Length: 346
Image (tube, rainbow, N blue to C red):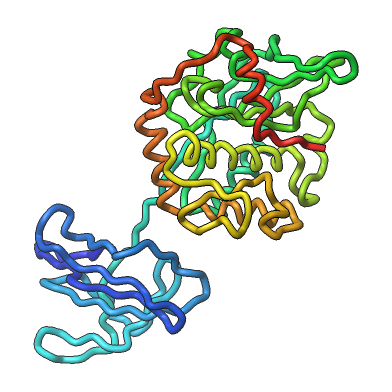
């Protein structure tokens, strides 16, 4: 919380508390004229809910700026003074210390790598990230990378069962790995399969061993018939749905498998908020029957602490320190991992 001082003074807040009738609240204590002394930090992260009334106590020192109103309209709502007592014991009902509540949420970039130089997929990527940002204590932003249409794919099966997918080793083989930005959490590959081919899955996610630049990748074909058709909701197409699904795999895989900060949970009985990350492939095991609601709930289980770890990982580019050793190109080990934890869009 920032306190506006009067010019030439050391006006500050020495103590603050925010609470209401259904919430014990938070406290903040001043640490003296050191560092950024205009600010004090609360003892825990909190969210002020719209249209709710909260109580506050603020103890100030020196000469903070004062709003001389009983009720003041401020950014985000209104603030009321029920009583202000000055250093001489005089009481007022129209003195409100000038403060500003601040919160810098973690910021995380995802690189959407589109293998086409003209197709506009922003409708799907923006809708997906808007959904994510509505359900997590962080801000996810898109980095758009455009590359020529993919010419190399990985194929599995024979005859009518033959199918294709774009994997990390294909991108590397085409010489595109060095063209990708490093300052991002991972890469989401969006590509078109060739006429006469069929994709193996609606979407898939690989770990850093089979990813790119030692980062995770997700991959999905955007010329599949279901991509632009209504998905979980009439106004949410299948392309948005698959991005949301695989992006959660990327996040969960990074925190659980790559860095082992948390454990995964395959059912509600295993899940502990703040300690585990739910497996988005196991909807029924968590008691849900609606994909939209389950996906929203899965993202809501990502705490601010988890998001801060994600931000730290990509900003420090720590994937480069994992000491990853890749198996030979297109080996059985690659194909085995490629088929683990992938989502089949039917």
